[in-house]
Image (cartoon, rainbow, N blue to C red; front, side):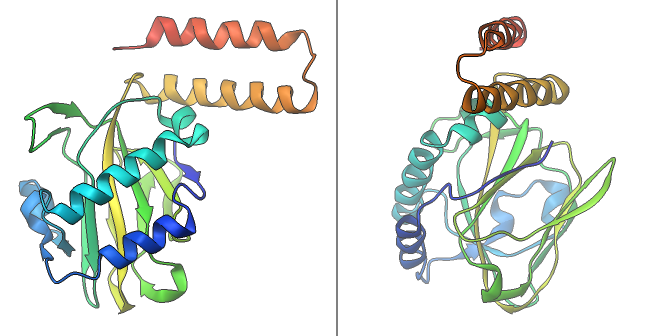
Length: 226
């Protein structure tokens, strides 16, 4: 299940991130890649423990907490570290699958990566190439969103970033351990929650809302791992 969440970061927050990322402290992005991904990865990254990365990570996590659509889509239990990446001309990330487990550098806490997420920090017209391409049973999906927008997709998906041919691609990427491990169950809950919201908006006094909401929460109660 891929979900596009528009405007996770406000224009002001995007501007703040962009200003903070005009730093010369970028390092080779392979420092956080697994064995397989390191062979495919060619980009730049802020050091995870740099003051800029820590400040922007707090900003992004707070923004995620304001997004009902993001919460509905992923039902987050834990986040990985937030990685801030830059792709300049000829940089890319070849086909790979994300690591199943990631470790928080500061705490040593391990999380299972159920969902991968990318927040775009540069608008599409600022660079050419640099599409995130995600493979699933329905084919390939190329994603290149407005600055501040987020895309989520299952971490089991094979995906790649096409070569940048002009400009610079700026993103932050992170992973989520969901309260619902199974992607099918997560998708069913997402569809049910969205249907409840649509019915509530169009007919707030409809008697079925209580029944549907009870079904949602009872399924959540049955499937949740916390």
